[in-house]
Every structure is written in structure tokens, then in C-alpha cells.
Amino acid sequence: MDLTPTAAEAALRADVRAWLREHLPWEYGRGLPPRFDDLAEEVAFGREWQAKLASGRWVGVAWPEEYGGRGAGPVEHYIVTEELARARAPELVGRIGVNLVGPTLLAHGTPEQKARFLPNILSATEIWCQLFSEPGAGSDLTSLSTRAERVDGGWQLNGQKVWTSYAQFADWGWCLARTDPDAPKSKGISALVVDMHASGVEVRPLRQITDESDFNEVFFSDVFIPEDRLVGPEHGGWQVANSTLTHERGVNPRQLVIHAQLIDELWRFAIEQGAFDDPRLAPRLAQAFAEVRIFQLHNWRSISRTAKGADPGPVGSINKLWWSEMSKRLHDTVMAVVGDAAPLWRGASENAGDGVWQRSWLYYQASSIWAGTNEIQRNVIGERTLGLPREPRA
Ligand SMILES: Cc1cc2nc3c(=O)[nH]c(=O)nc-3n(C[C@H](O)[C@H](O)[C@H](O)COP(=O)(O)OP(=O)(O)OC[C@H]3O[C@@H](n4cnc5c(N)ncnc54)[C@H](O)[C@@H]3O)c2cc1C
Image 1 (cartoon, helix red, strand yellow):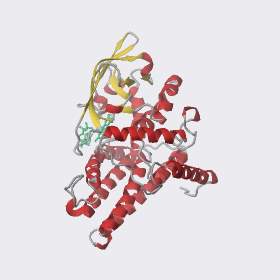
Image 2: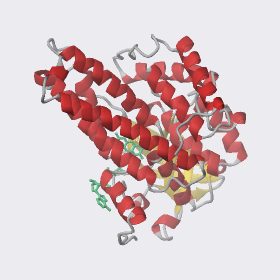
Image 3: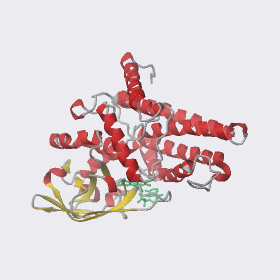
């Protein structure tokens, strides 16, 4: 791995930095996203920001130019993402589309599907959700029972999904459904694009431990899916889904952006609270800092492998396992700095940070579950990297 930037990479970094200094909605590298009273407000703000970012062609940097990208490679994508972190830019509201659906459509979509969907994903004109998990199918996704039955001109969809992040704001859903109930589990699934505004789609928000509703239950009752919304071969959706899952776990610098910002915030907060003078806290803070730095270097190593055309393979699982466990330790350290105010919430007096850290701590408890649980990542690493015996599969 050679971390010396080429002249073109250094120029790209300077360009994105200059653009961010001019366009960020708050002071470069110092401001904080506004506190929103509800998720709908935050999503509206996020759409505006992503549209602006896309107009500068800083979203989907590695996507082909014809769809609004720059036709660049993973290293350039990573540089832009790092600069977004440095600037403390808001997270992409359309991240499911940008990080999961877009790359899968690029690999498996028809030219018409790419032209129809990709540009609007980048600009957040249309928001996507991921309709994979079901009440009876999470880790073992091939057990899914949502059915799409052949009808004239397409399919009729019936069933239920769960934990669908942002479904209440989504225009389109990236859905796995069983199209051949008689085939072996993984051979009878198709990947379908669902119009979330279609008749028969019902979204019910779920209340989380943070008192927010980022995710939802989604019910389908006789939803019509036209023929041209099938992505990849009919009954061949499991291979298509694997592309999505590889991107979800894989070498995606999103978590780096988040954690680079978190460590920066934690540093300032710890200084304000005098935590570095506490011999019990100082080593934990140093560890949190070192771990985020290791994560950054590990990301660079993964990116450099991908840039050389290597299959990211289980590297994605190692990444996911590392950042989620690192994140939980980091958040435990934050709560130790928050100290006696740890059980307090937003609006309570004597609560430095006004509940931001408490919310973040609660939220990141789920990090070992989403994008494939950590037990599943350990299985993947054990089987594919260490060559341990495989679990029996149906
Ligand atoms: C914040 C958040 C957002 C999410 N957003 C989405 C979304 O937008 N779209 C979507 O489709 N899904 C989403 N999910 C769902 C997520 O993908 C699933 O929760 C996850 O895949 C686990 O599935 P499950 O909840 O059904 O748990 P289960 O699969 O039932 O697992 C229960 C427990 O058993 C363990 N386990 C299961 N199988 C094995 C095994 N073979 N070996 C060892 N241990 C095992 C698991 O690790 C876990 O601890 C989200 C989840 C969270 C927490």
C-alpha cells in the first residue's frame, strides 16, 4: 500500500475542499448540523444538501459521468468522502440509494433502468429504501416469504418486510421476493423495484429506543410490479442481492466519515469537560483516537486492494466487525465523560451536550445488528478467511 497521493489525487482533494468551503451550510470544519425537531425536517434538509452536493458532482464520484458521477475510481471516492468528514458535512440522506442500490443497478440493471433511476439517486430527487429483512428472515435472508406471483404484465406482490430504514420517506424500494416457491430457497428469489407510492403499499413506523422512528414495517397487499422493474434474471435475485450486501458491508467509507467526526466531537467535548485530567478517562480517550486512526488506515488498505481490482470479499466483514465494535467502545468512553448526566435526555439542565451523546450511544447499540449481525460477520471471516468448516446451509 502506497499512501503517497498522485498529483491528480492531490488536485481532487484541493478541489473538493475548496468547493466545501464555499458551499457548506455552516462554518467549514467547525459547525454542527442543526438540531431537528423531527426526522421529516431532517430529511428535507438532507435532500437539499445532497442536491447541492450532487450539482458539484461530489456524490457517486466513482459512477459513470452519464449518470452524474465523475467516472473516477475507489481512491477518488475515498478522498472525497474523507474531505466530507473533515468539513463535517451532513450525511447523505439518500445513502441507501447511493451506497447500496446504485452500485447494484450499475452491475445488474438494464440501460433503461440505469438511465431512469441513477441520476435521481445522486441528487436525492428520489429516496430509496431496502426491503430485504422480514419478521422470519433476517440473517437467513434466503428464508424470505414475501411472494411475487406472475400476473399479466408483471407480478403481484404480497407479504411483509421489517426494519426498513427511511421507508416512510422513500419513493422506491429495493425488494427481494420469492418468485418460485418450488425452487431451492436461494434459487427462487427475484430482485424487484417497488414504487413505494403504489396502491397496496403500507408503511408503519416503528418506535426505537431513541424515541425516533428511522425504521418501519412495510406491508404489501396485491401490489402490482410491472415487468420492467425486475433487476437481473427472474429467480436470479440472490446473486443480485449479494452485490447489495457486499456493498453494505464492504469498503464503504461512510462509517469512516461518521467516526472521524465523532472522534473530533469527542475530543472537544472531553477538553470542555476536563476529562484529560482524569487518569481513568485519558487512556480510554487515547484508545478511541487510536482505534479510529487504525480504522482509517485499514480503510486505505482495503481501498488500495479494490483499486487494484481485488475482490473485497471478506474484507467487508472484517471492516464491519471492526467499526461496529470500535464504535461501541468509543460510545462507552463518551458516556464515561458525560458522567452523572448519562441517564439524562435532551432539554434536561446540567446535561452537557444536551442529550446528543446519549442519543448516539443508544443508536450505536444497534450497530452490531444492522448490515449483517456481527455473529454472521464472524462466520464469514471464519469460513472464507480462516478456512474453518462451513455451517450446513439449506
Ligand atoms: C438500525 C437498523 C436498521 C436496519 N435497516 C434495515 C433496512 O433498511 N432494510 C432491511 O432490509 N433490513 C434492515 N435492518 C435489519 C437487519 O438487516 C437485520 O436486523 C439483521 O440482518 C439481523 O436479522 P434479524 O434481526 O432477523 O435477527 P436474526 O437473524 O433472527 O438473528 C438473531 C440473533 O441470532 C444470531 N444468529 C442468527 N443466525 C446465526 C448464525 N448462523 N450463526 C450465529 N449467530 C446467528 C444473530 O447474530 C442475532 O444475534 C436494520 C437493522 C437495524 C438494527
